[in-house]
Amino acid sequence: MLTLHIQPGARATRVVGPHADALKIQVHAAPIEGQANIALVKFLAKAFQVPASQVVLKQGSLGRHKVVEIFATQIRPEILWPNING
Image 1 (tube, rainbow, N blue to C red):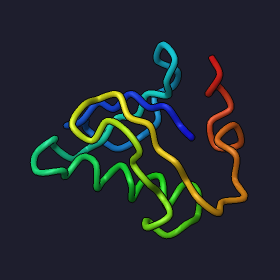
Image 2: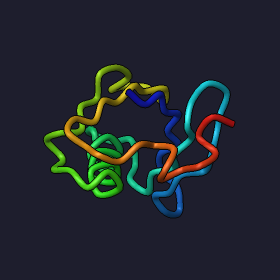
Image 3: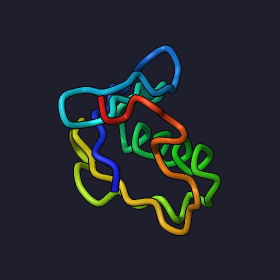
Image 4: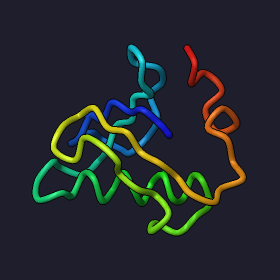
């Protein structure tokens, strides 16, 4: 499970780094009608090399603080983002 802090409406979708107890990700999409959540799921699916259906938003669908679970990936978050633990 990943704990994330999302900043929608950013210039580009990218990982910024640690943010308190979460990993901060800027998302290009606006927070309108779930667009930012969809963009986040697509971004994580690509990063973890899984179909988007294997990225599940467990908590925080309406807020910036989210918990996401990624199923059947062989990639650990620390490999993608070495500074994930601060």
